[in-house]
Image (cartoon, rainbow, N blue to C red; front, side, top):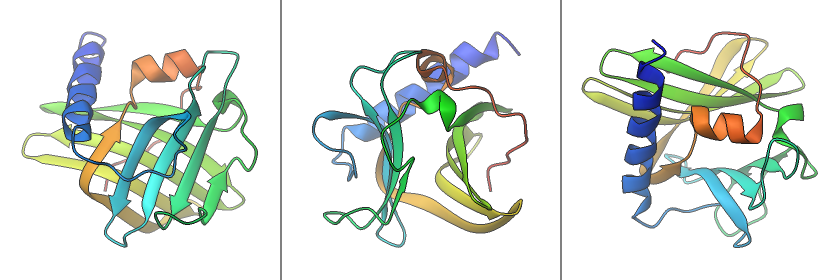
Length: 168
């Protein structure tokens, strides 16, 4: 399994990078680094935005969700802060692929931004859970971009998730 993680990270990173060549809507500002971004079927944009100088001890990451060109409906954390205080990360292995995700909890709601690929399928988007039960799944539609994966998790010092997550 240890040998699969680098291949998995490369597969996910390449797939995201290839797709990123198309125009991808984002809630990130021009002076920020887009870690993840896509448009959902509800025409809302999911984005993970980071400072360009993100290290294990400095910089910030924010989740933003909302209508393109408008103020985001949800920003987490509300002020830019280092991700190790607010997010958890995880990787998944599947036959012929794998996945990566970032998770955060706000009150009784948990949000999981993810990418995944397997034999004959690929999914990316956000899952919303309330008290541990899935209440929403917003898949990405069209072009998307992602840097989610073990290398980015390590750079940002995002701790591993202690729970389970299954891509819907």
